[in-house]
Length: 243
Image 1 (cartoon, rainbow, N blue to C red):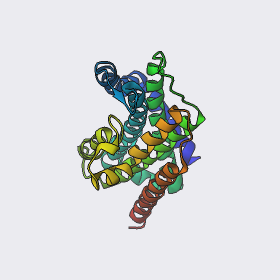
Image 2: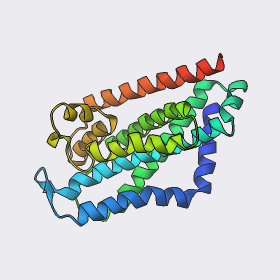
Image 3: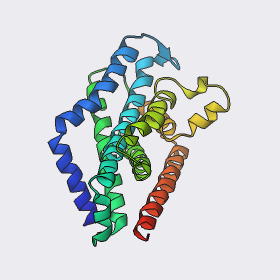
Image 4: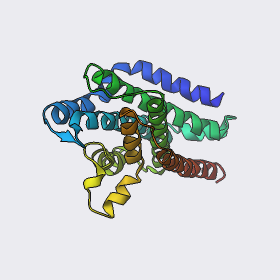
């Protein structure tokens, strides 16, 4: 019941701010698509650069959509509305509250990625998006929603959420296999960037878009991130309850 309640709150918020959420999901990826994809005529790995860019934009939109849906709202609710304190004294199981927040963020990220897919649908690229694509988008959104939840617990003020975006999300947006391949990076740094969650998501999405299998290693890495940050979130919230 607690999960449904949290998801219902997210749904009401989504309906209320539908146009704002949709425009926010569209504008940045659309600008990248127009400037880098159509404005710069080049190739990548022997194919049009647009074929490389579109899967990366879908993954990036999934990441930013899920992260922003959780980080800022949870920071405000915890610091100013004291909603987290109310949940702790209520009969709602805390794991249901955590899971509801993560699922809500994941679905918001999936919506953001779906918007990009619809925008690029008229472009004849020959890319394939199927059930594997849906699973990758949902898993990516779940991972970044969980990361956002942990960071929202660590936030000391409302302004910390935008800082986390600048410190974590923006660098990953540009470095993690979205606009250019990690293969061109210097050794050492390349290996570090390649195991970040967005890099793995982009790599799997591109393999699926090319008509191949996603590869199980990427799922293993993403699930590892999910397990670690879920554990941190559970540890934090239960420790706070027991203080």
